[in-house]
Image (cartoon, rainbow, N blue to C red):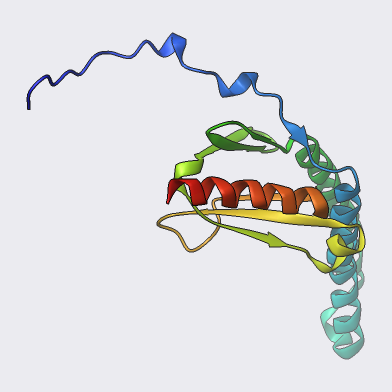
Length: 173
């Protein structure tokens, strides 16, 4: 252990991720979110209706009153939180890392250095594909699920991002 040093780092001189300009998700992605929510809300309405037809003894007037109040309130809250969450999401690519910001009440920012990226995947859902959008999934070592999922990117841009990340991975090998 010759010439070992363990100097203190001045944390005020570190780069601040808060100063990064984040790219917002594509505006069409909110339509994708709304369509998926409408499908979910439709299930919330259809399931009790079908059950009431098959087993009418389970549903009294009070249950229909409660469902008539709860479903619209829950549906409205889900849509509002989805809109707020959509507006808060953003991503950025810097020379050495990728950043993803999300959250509704608390904002979370995930920073992954390129030297930790193991795999990159591009996914298109049925509704997203209709709008020409894709999702980038970035995997790091030590996990079976992706560490960052960046939805709502135009497919062409998502393919370029995937190529950028794959190029960064190849340089490290």
